[in-house]
Image 1 (cartoon, rainbow, N blue to C red):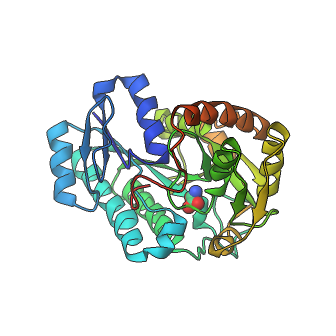
Image 2: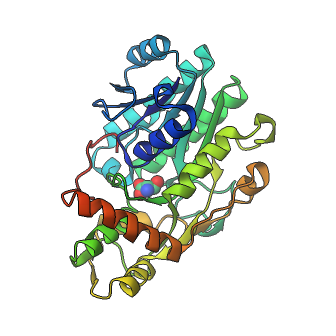
Length: 324
Ligand code: SER
């Protein structure tokens, strides 16, 4: 059985579907603070509850965990205690069980591990990690835990430093890169968008199909080929907020954006603009497939179809606060 935590979130909802297509509906257990529902098996799970997690792993015969439950960067600044509790203690609970029960683990780290003293362009795999957010601090801590459990305790845990993810199934919940998704919702609803970072803000991003392919490629890789046990740098593409707005405007000429930076600008300013993923390319053959035009075309088509069917879906109303 494959366990997905945070399955109601942005990545979780799409990953559960991809895993079920691959392995069969009954072999993927979707969990979140409230049971995610849907077709296959689902349960409520709080990852900070170690005995509850252990019982579930034993009862369901879990062998692999995609541990996605966590608070993102902006919401983490508002709830720092909860951010530490879920992101660090939740991961440690999963790693402890992985060690005692021989589980394989995937866990997402983030570009948020970097900070103002990190080189911002072509950020190397091994470099300064001086995050200025509680979220970033939990991700650095998580990477150190993964490295420790892998090297010292022999746990098979694999990780990616994910950038901002663009997708149309479930909106992200409380990240600094959320504007890249919110712009599409506004454009498709013929609404003006107020962007919370400046137009020239350039951050690493990735389209969901590339993200899912990267996660599965990494998990399929031969353990002997993997030399990074903290978390792999990985890239999709980088663009500024205004470049994205312009690409959308080319297809929807009436789309307008006003820029009103808030506290998230200061977070974005400490993150890299583009990171070097040569280790991921060399160790497990990573290559992104989607450029900006391909993402914008696909998002407008797929999200447009979704919003046509369910106009009430809102990117600013995540289903759960703490497991986005
Ligand atoms: N997308 C995430 C965030 O903005 C980065 O890991 O918090």
